[in-house]
Length: 431
Image (cartoon, rainbow, N blue to C red; front, side, top):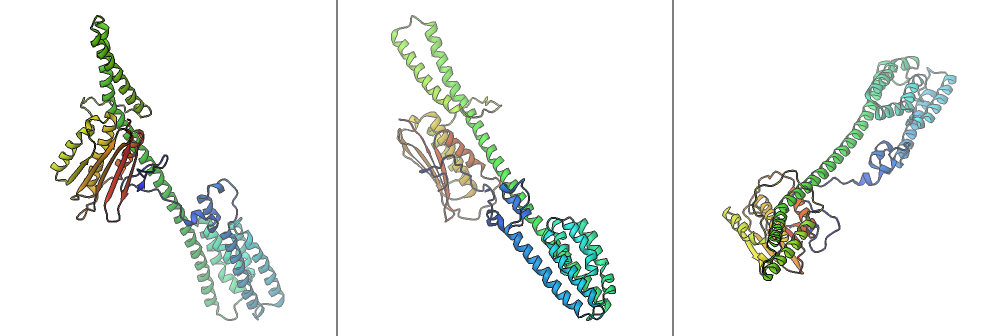
């Protein structure tokens, strides 16, 4: 069964109810941060937080790819410069040297993206061989820096395109066509870099949303557990107060009737002993339970397992098909705290079946004996028709799991492949 298996519980495990949100889990990329850029890997890998940014495997691959692209484009530019009749051989050699230095400077693009892109703007005007390095620097700027830097340096790169082709006319294209080609290429590089940056920001925003959803789900579960503890404490308040009142009455009778017959004294002492033992058991269950600030002054008796027949009858009166299989020989002999917990679990199970499987027949089975424990099962098949959307996030079953845990038992649930649902709880029953 999902959650905590009633037969084999997991230590400290909690069982969410149907519809409860499951905290988002890290995906394959989060489990392999070396496949992410270093800036994003720090967000997914806590061990990298607060440390100096180091290249991941993906960063090294990207850096080699950018360097290789700058070199290839630079070689194409160097070949064009060497065959350009408008450029002297001396200037062509200087162009190639300048381009080689620019390609080597590509390895600094992560450390100084703004400075490198700004420095390569005039270099690209003086050297066609540095065109690939200038494009890589502009792409890096668009990826790693805000748009204001891209706007200024990208605008400067576009503005110097006419100057570059005026100083060194292209041998294969006209002046106007060369300017159009250079401007479109620069805009494409900037657009590509901004697209990569937006994808990274989207990935980080999705991670932030997932973390917030996890935190909110944990807070909701914690709040549901706290409310369940408060309800349990309020319910047990009346039972404990009743036992202590009984103790006080009999103790007062002994105090004011010291000359009572021995039989009455023995009977009163037995009642005091038994009530004290039961009150101590109830008090042990109250310990660790958070008390609510509001007291329940209704004075109504708390239901126990003996009231399960009444609960089933009320459910049937509400046009619900319920079959009760109570195999406990004497429900009235079940301890009060145990019967109250079993009653609440059955009540919540019927409520869930009514909400999520209206019209389906629900089977409630109760078995157990002193020394063996009490097992309660609520099972329903798939609903016969469409089920309208039901508000809520399964906090009820979280509260039931808290009840069962506080009682020393366990609770589990399982959604069947046919659309049915099975809720089962085991509670200790002392012999």
